[in-house]
Length: 165
Image (cartoon, rainbow, N blue to C red; front, top):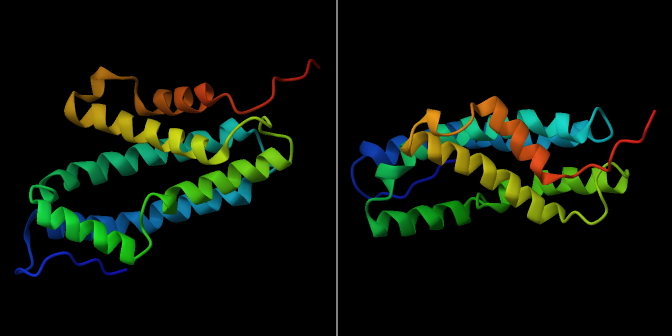
């Protein structure tokens, strides 16, 4: 993937952000797609917690580099166009998560009333929000990332109640 949004000379915050995105985004998307290999294995919550933890790390890293890149409206517009041209909008993250949740739902491991796409959005929003707060207010303003990941997944309330043994 080669994103380009600048006609100017290379260098600076925009190019740093694009380089980071080109390096980190494919790995993050592959982590999300690999979740499909966990369908039917372990507990759904246990499968999602490391995904949320990785999402928090991803957003922490990417958000800190993104801020200076969006100081110019024209750069922002070109960046959006580059993402669209490469199929890297938000659905690149949502689709693999929603697919995993749909598969687990078909297997009876996620409640039937759960909306997989909306839940994927909520899960990613939780990752993004935790990273945002840590970056702007400070890490001490919220729970540690591991605890946050557990809280985000728990509060999605995806799995049927455990049956008594």
